[in-house]
Length: 613
Image (cartoon, rainbow, N blue to C red; front, side, top):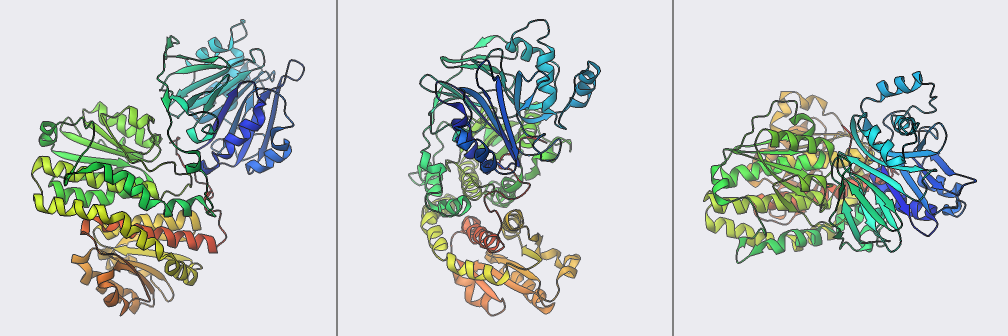
């Protein structure tokens, strides 16, 4: 969700803050603001604006109009209070000497606001964040310094938060605090940085550390001092970030989403090739022992959004490979369903950012019940990665577009590799078949390149159907799971109403939605059920619906006899076909959104990393 950038150094802060915020636009936001200390006479110079960052940047002449070398910036996605200049961050204290930027939610802000109002403190916004600014100032009334006051404040507030705090009385430092919302510290030459995502500061430094829950930090030009939840000094490990800056730029493509769709073959190579050695899966530093794997009674996959759809495909594949029961649960539901997990349960947590709050909460609940946690994430050092017993990184590189593409593909590839590894340990899959799958795995990037080279055909179909009011995706087995992701992609970036249904459920009510001109995307890549897929297409056609079908090259001609249009993908092992089939669905959603004039990389009301419940 919202983005935070902070800077303490020798250069003008405002241009650096605005540049960093521009690299966080992909997270989703509706307003932006900066607070910069501009000297004793001016104090904190706070500027905020509703709308895109370019509005704020225009007001500040790209930052040149604001003097000062210490500051914080923020892009906000509204939770408490509608998007407005008043509700934008930074929020300031009554005296104007303290400014706060905040990601997350202060759950007891109503109680705290009532207390502060009882002390005569006026409020100028509807936000929960304003409570923090006033509360810190309240705790300074006995002359306490800013860090002490922040510590007192933290003992009163409840919820999830990442905070950046600047005080005009102590203008040579920034305060950073983290609980259940990501914050990264950056180390430069004569300067330090604060950010909610490494992409915001990568242009200035590659040396970073990741704050843990309950920690605070004081940033100065000379360095960063971190503190634990008891405000005792601690040392943080400094990591070297090896992402290239160009990886977070568009590289000539019109949109990040399209760039990331086209990057999928290379992302697959990074995720898969280092993990196949001598015809078997090799997982470096894998901590789950063979004895533990053999003791498992069940597997539970927990994820949200597209990662949940990865889990849906994974359930079919893992159960077939391992002959163990696999349950897939939304992260937002896991804690509230009294899940049946214990020490003989492996909980697989999937998240692109590694910071998804619902998924993080589910992880902690599973751990409390005794389960071992294996996470599949993209961001090294993220919260989920640090709290897991075992981490498998997707190595997809930075994903900027809100709608995930290469993260989905690499998550699914890594999950399949995990299943193949465990099947060898369990002896649940014939060695010949396992090795055959791995040989086919090596060909996937090339086959995916072939799929993407036929993008013009997908664009043509999008031009035919982009103006439909509703689109339905149908399929069986892994095709149903794949349809869930295709439907989500279409609705989240084109705003077309879209639903995915298991084909066998058509006659149980959903076929009543099909009428003359309805578009149905029929998935027929699960070849052992191909005849049933054809029967469902006939059903839809008989009700006047138009059918756009997705199947393999070997079945395309047969499918074309009935469907209005066919998109074909190369044949591959059945378990791997969803890795090829998702790309045309991503492209269809992209082109439909493009033709509808939508803001593809920043779809309305959505954010890249969901860090509130």
